[in-house]
Amino acid sequence: MAAVVGSDQAFDYLRKMVHERAAIVLDQDKRYLLEARLGPLLLSERLGSFDELVIRLGAPDGGPLRQRVIEAMTTNETSFFRDKRAFQALRYQVIPALIADRAAERRINIWSAASSTGQEPFSIAMTLKEYDRVLAGWNVEILATDLSNEVLARARTGTFSQLEVDRGLTPALLSRFFEKVGTTWRLKEDVRRMVNFRQLNLIESWPHLHDLDIVFLRNVLIYFDVPTKRRIFEKLCQTLRVGGYLFLGSVESTLNLTDNFKEVSSGKSILYQRTN
Image (cartoon, rainbow, N blue to C red; front, top):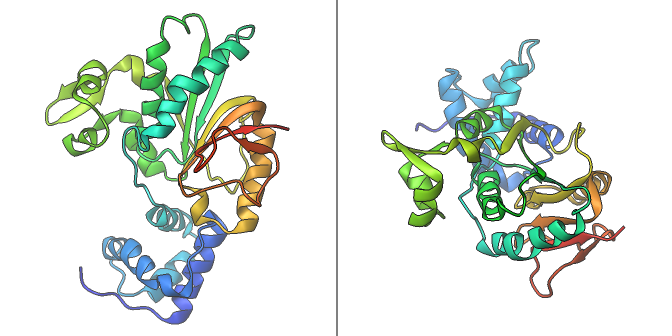
């Protein structure tokens, strides 16, 4: 890809816009990241520089293009059963505890935030399949959200390339839950229909989110500044039930951000429980 150019003012505008709309912090030394992520967008729009992009973004009809810029800047790195410790904790610790605690209600609500192309929520669904008999008659809902409509459209198909299924899936899981469609693999319908995908920006309002039992919010907070992280934890306390479980990424923590969660395991924790 040919190099693209832009003034310091154009890059400052883009950094500010990305922060305001997605809370992603891009320091001055991250100009290369803007160039790498937005370069293909400039080519597709036949724009010669980032200054031209900024002009287009400021036009009255620039809304769709602004959304495309934000989606291009969003990291969509994901894989099936990413960080196996989280899914071991889900299967052997969290789900059994909730089955006992929610026996009277017979209901479990799960949210996979920043779900990207669907590997995380579908991994959750496959894990729940291990409890099919126990959870018969229960109302189990998995909501998966992401900022990007493009990746959500892909996720809803439940279709993945050979490379994608090779990342995290054993041959046994592939055989049990997928069917071959041409050169791709598609999740079987009973797994696909367990997940409801919806567009949501984490720094905006969270409509229809309440009485959650499990939240996967992994590898997202690392891109936000401290005030944004604190606001997200405040909103989590309005949506996650007391006693509910929160999964974070291995380099993320609640430390100095909230007093409403405790580590479920000692050491380098990935699992927290809401206490109040």
